Image 1: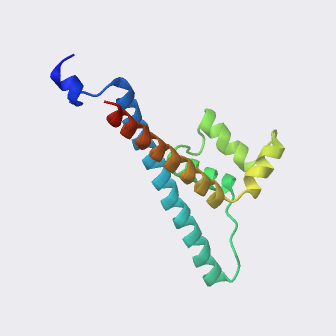
Image 2: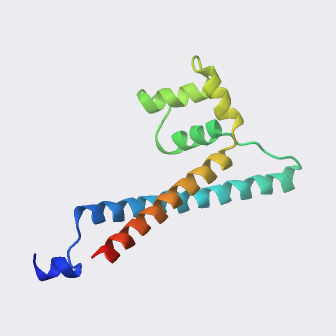
Length: 133
């Protein structure tokens, strides 16, 4: 072994994968947390303005996200098919009903917890590798 390998100067493949996974976990975790807070803030604003709580389901969020970034009118393909299914389902009606009923804020919060868990887990494994040398 060279001197840099024993002192931690080079990174192993596992450590590189853990660092990438940690970065992805941080982006997902904190990005979804920010989206969750924005969505709750929007709903509270509408509650104060209109006097009633606005329900935003997962299907509403998916439809809005697909329309703003990925699907244009007249498009074909899998994302366009998903967008059309979210608008007017012809099969998988039970899943569509669940996506309508479950709040998007709950899904964003759950994704935030999952992303943060991956971030913390990867960080712990990196520290474990550092202590093992």
